[in-house]
Image (cartoon, rainbow, N blue to C red; front, side, top):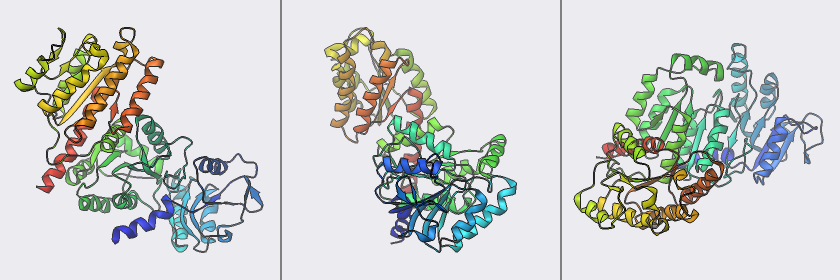
Length: 482
């Protein structure tokens, strides 16, 4: 019942039936006008109420003079006017707004605005509304068909994001979309005058649509509460944290960005160890890690350790074996029974079958690429790895093989994965030299794989880092459940 209360309290934010827009211009060029166009294009079907002191109509919609005059109460108000005007605007709403999101800056991120931010928060509390921001871009919610960004997938996915930076939130959506991420929602929180990352974490933990949670945090003003929420959750959903301001220089940058001062980096490392959340260092690692948790189901009863590598490019396999070993992932030689089964295929000279299974392009050309299915079948059935990484250097095939060979290779890998659901984590690495036509094929392969629940990475190091994060989560859950 408590979880349902949390879900109900955030429904007006993630699936608003009424949206008010404050700051739209009759000339149509202001950011709030762009927001109106974006949510219409995104498929928003609820009521939109432009708020304007004198206009009768904006962008073909009837306008209203204040938030208190709209025909229905407002679930979500998007506000982009001068900072000094906003507290009075909220006070005059007469309790008819559920969530107010303030894009305007000039509040707690600058010394002269700290008092105004306190006034803003007090006005929101007095009006019975929750406040997002100020100094934030807003929300992206496919389930509610509301978005602050121009480009983002419309499909409702399993990844819930909390970002203290609006610009980084945009990067997460755009770059994540290209990598195959699909979102249950993304909320930017800016200065966190009211709604905090901890509040939204509670929602995502309760939300049945969300399976993995990502957080970009510059500070946690309620750090003890964040810790308690994560500890109580016992890593039942993976939580990936990208922490800004982990160095002294980063702390200074965070203070000027959102008016935040963050704690000692050692506290965040301790938080990760004690709660099982995954701490990452870069945006690429953040997306890599979210992707593996989106695609694969953690197996805490047997945490990932044994990894099989299969693909073309001998040096790549050797480097990957070293890299994986440093991450605590073992690319150990197969037992003799598996080696014998692979030897029985009578693969061409130059093929290594001990693990890594390293195949020259000539080997992978056999049966127009379908030989991969036989190799993968043996690795799954006999080698019994906990993870299998197939890597293809796509550029090595250009001009040397028929176009369908690559298609057949990828298709074979995806078919074998369907035959052995849950037996081993399957990861696909598609390497390219950036040649435009090859990149286009890579995008096509990625889309097919993601549709089947297979995460795709650009390099072996990306795959290794993501698998190590998965392993850490599995080990934490295994240990706590033992």
